[in-house]
Image (spheres, rainbow, N blue to C red):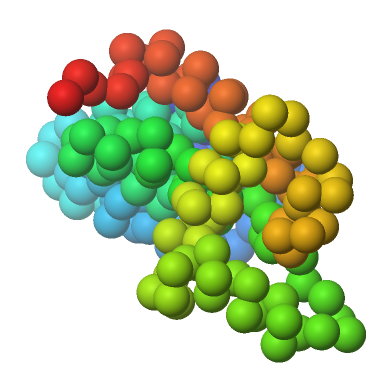
Length: 180
């Protein structure tokens, strides 16, 4: 965000914070962004710099999305593979609290219900996608239906809002579902 705002070096700006992070934490964060493809590995002079780097187009998209950078990259890869809607749903589900109810009294039943949502694959991503798609196919999302299907009504509603926001922000970059 500091790079997008054009506020100078990350190290210099964060050193001015009330509770500045360790320099090694900043370097780690910059290296992580470089690994994700959000920042160029080399500076404008062609030299590797641990502390700095120019943002890539992918980095600008990551900055715009209200999700973790790794999830933003996942969504962009979903666009490239023509599964944007599915990537947005899975990404939003992974970014928020679980949409699956987690009963302390009946952990086994909650786990079995989650396995049912994944159609036996054991994949959280498939379970999120199936549960969200079925919940949105209902005429109206209601608490009783969610409770019968071991889904958290509040978190599903938050996920729906996040999906709309991600879709809107991707639209600002002209990233929309590709025609088949």
